[in-house]
Image 1 (cartoon, rainbow, N blue to C red):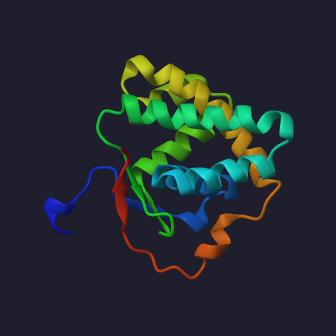
Image 2 (image 1 turned 45 degrees about the vertical axis):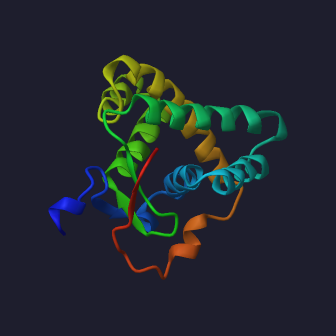
Length: 164
């Protein structure tokens, strides 16, 4: 890889179909959200069809708040892979690990993980949001077919984009 094209945080550290289904869905929702209005509509639809009517909007707002906080308070622009890419980038992996740790109830550890992505002043807020998002992501994966099925034949290549 040419050093001038390397994007910190974009290095492939895994493959999406080896993750827990809810973690793969979480990363795919992050990718879709960052694609713009069409992707955001897909994420909204996923929340609306996978969660009870009374909670879907609240959980979607928590997801929006988490992604917004990550983008606003990041040490550097975060890097993601394209929606159809089977790779999991370093930033995406940290994001999934943050959400998993927070939703497991270990907010102290989650706050430390958050500092890998955002400033220390915002780490606790990010960890709290991540806990809520993780609970809804786990719940959502129980109610719908997993998006990773579409990636089963994808060749693994590094395709990274910067979150903006």
